Length: 155
Length: 264
Picture 1: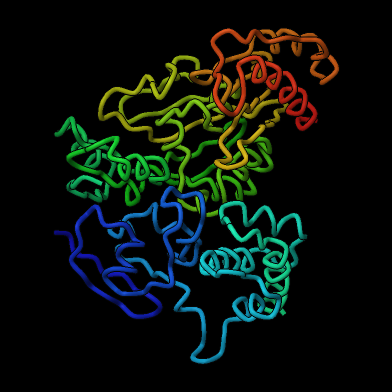
Picture 2 (picture 1 turned 90 degrees about the horizontal axis):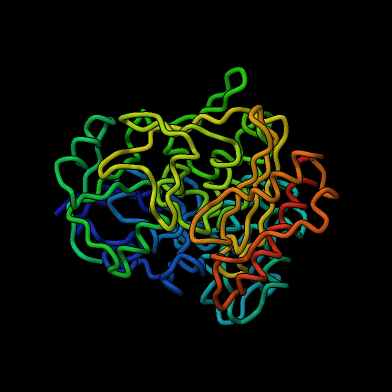
């Protein structure tokens, strides 16, 4: 079996994996990092979004072996100890979640977006969230949260 | 997903050798189509050859009247390239609206064109801009490349290395995206090129095709108004739960008008 070394949330981990192991399976089942969710499993819903080398990707549509040698950040890696990441804090403050299932993917997408868009319009935020689906229909507050979180990250 | 052997070759020659050594091997680019296909067990390659570490497939350059894009260039890189935006703004616009941001961070132009999904965006740009497809064996003109539903002129084991796009006088792209998948229900790429007006349609039929009726109308005058009343035959167009063939035929003219307006 292939061996992969992936830096996950700052810590290098080396594991043997089957080549067909998805990155999301590696995170959830091999590393017990269950903050990254599987929703549709067809790369449409975005619940599984994590960062690979700083960029938001769908971990249900990436093999663990493709991430060999990369740095992966999951929702567990955002907070600084007990202090929430500004985007997490914005989602809490603006009630950007209802059931919370889509939230990790929403936040990981939003953090990558905020790095590249310092002062986005509401339309740009909505477009950036095209690949993340919230089935509680909570988009209005999610958009508010992303706007506030983007401002906080770039403030 | 079925089991397979995974390879990550470091050169084009090594990648080609791996693919030629085994007819059941499959090339993996961004994986945004191949991995969902494998997950559904619709394909069972013995070997998967990851192209991400092949240096010959990477990079964007603009020289004179030609834009060159390596096959392993991700949609996000085309969308964000200042050089592409300056030379062929319609191409960067197209790249910026494929799928969603996470898909654009993985998916590549080479993967999209080699797969030739009938609703993919890039084949329309390759065909309308009269691009040349450079493989590890030969060069293929866009008019000879696309062979209908998921079929291309590529031989088994043949790899796209890069694309060269002649810079058009002007070009525009407009699509009516499926609201769930963002694939094109109908996408129309119009270009005024050195060899005349070329119009390529994706999403509407079993594969990308040139719309001769639209081309003829625009050859007279490259304006949205010249498309008033122009009808594209619906025969052979896709009919599914998202729209009938007649609806798609109507959308072709509508999207062509928007594309011409976008071309300026």
